[in-house]
Amino acid sequence: MFFHKFKHKIDLKQINSMKSLEQVQILKLLKTNNINSLWHFTDIRNLPLIQKLGGLRSKKFLEDNSLLGKIVTGGDTLSHV
Image 1: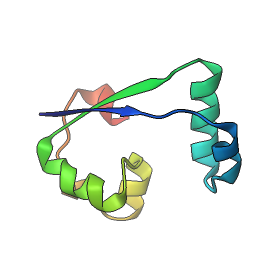
Image 2 (image 1 turned 30 degrees about the vertical axis):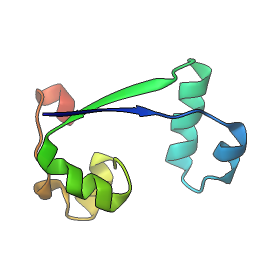
Image 3 (image 1 turned 120 degrees about the vertical axis):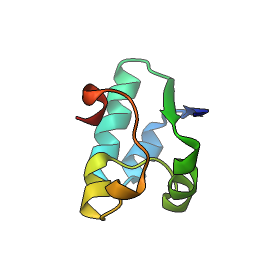
């Protein structure tokens, strides 16, 4: 298991320059709730794909791009919703 802490400072200028509505909504939610840190746990075998994609992607993105079968999942059934 690999552990990495993603820290992201939320900047309204950055939100306005983003193209993805999903990203804008997520960043606004984080800012509104004063969430400054997120924790993500993943299997070390997922790191090359995370790096290739430039970061974490949604399950829908992975499904739409036929990548879901290329990752090692963990957790329980709620983790996969």
